[in-house]
Length: 215
Image 1 (tube, rainbow, N blue to C red):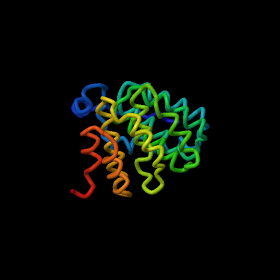
Image 2 (spheres, helix red, strand yellow):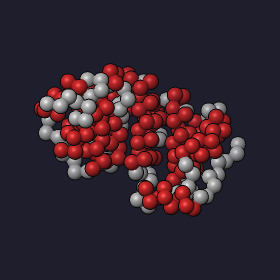
Image 3 (cartoon, rainbow, N blue to C red):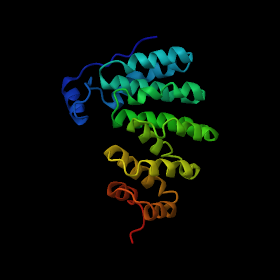
Image 4 (cartoon, rainbow, N blue to C red):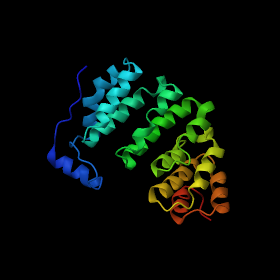
């Protein structure tokens, strides 16, 4: 199995690193370019055992350039449907490793996709992230059901929002607003009621109200 090696583009790498506040080095490979370069590996990965796949993801995640973390998450995501609950949770520690909004939200998609296919296990999946010390884990708890629409477990969503409603962390308040804004497309009355009856931050209210009817 050929390993993926991303070519270096210094000019693009500087621009991409600057966009991410220079928290991580980049190779300078755009998303469309990365998709082409990783296509064959993603295809081959579906035939690997869980241990082989997990080791491969760990190998790429450890590399310094940010594109390799994206590749690692892509490897997990294209294989998500074949993971058991226990296997899926093996990826949880990656969330807070080299964490920033880009990787955390990509991992949220991974966990959210698994949960959507296993709605009966959503409470257990939610509890794996809810109330965790690291706020990036809690951001996933808040946004875990972001694309579930009418299948959203409102008890879990409200629980996550209430728990962190006074947390002084931008990415948490942004997550609350994002979850409310997204769900308002499905049930604006529920979101409106929650905003009216819960003391939320101005940021969360502003973000969550974007699609609600103006008074």
